[in-house]
Image (cartoon, rainbow, N blue to C red; front, side):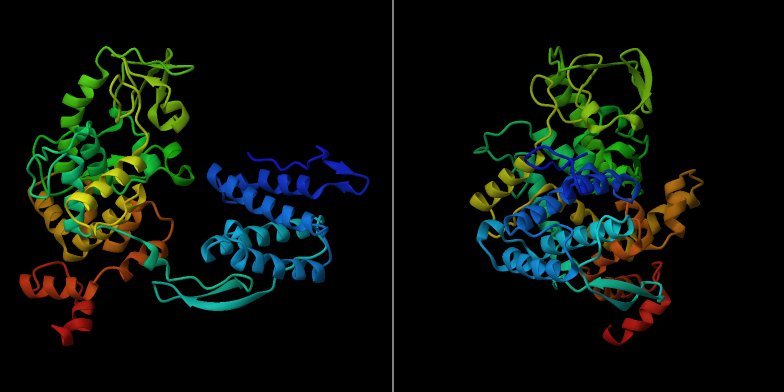
Length: 450
């Protein structure tokens, strides 16, 4: 938990607690206020620190009267949005800072630390996806940004395929790239393929243990395989279940059985304060002699796990069995190599792009009815597959919401703006003669364009 301290190391004076002490008290309550992520705590603390330093340089108290604070906010907005390059914030970062300061001052006023809240608000109405009208409050100090969906970058299928071939050390045709001198191609293709197939965040696939990888089915189907995530590795410590395609899962198992096994064999790698794993199963293992479930281990603890045969227990390892975590560099270098040698227009790729790519590809398949048809075949054949049964009944947007771990479908709905829904429904209806599970109301909506 971050703590703000004045340069003289004093927490209070004759007037009572210092403003930095009050800020630290607010930060300590964040886990109970709906912000369980340590990354969020640091972000909020940085916003408060920058604001306090700005006020201190101008000898304005943090808890001054409303008029002085509003004048300071005006100067702060000019400084942060149009000031020196090193101090300038993007509109989205500025809005985050404004929301942080607003929450702090509202709390401070309610607790009796601040005489007033220096922000002005306006109430607006918005329509939810289910048609309900709700009232929301907007802070007038925020600035307009681009549509949220316009900032979500993803790879179209040809680019995603090109990325996977390059990660595996191949050229765009799938043949071996003899000029490529990189290593760990099996690992890179397996783990990034898993990310593209499951929509995991970077932290989620980076700290996945090899024992949490689901087993291969005896018979492969088009229905994906469930992949359960441990709460400590997920955003906001909210565990969830997603899925991975059979082909991508087979690639992961090939990596585990060959390249990973060779890298970890006889490894003498030991972290500081190692956690030794014995008798591992899919659910847990004996860790330093005590039975633990994988779902109870934090990312920091997972980095210290030593497998029974030596080497890290994480899925991705380096030569010598040491855990590998730098996926941003792998993707950046691979994208640069593609631009230099094969496709100059190939975009910059960072780990979160894999998540958006999964979301777009999965939503298109859900809307087309691909997964529903595959699941129906499993159900009709008497298969006892909970995921297949779920897919035959659930709404596509709600399925994607569950896979991505969104609390509300409103967040998931942002992807619809990037998806050519009209084309998907039109093509599905025209090519399948209405055989797919296409909503009749949607077909009627677009029938003038068919």
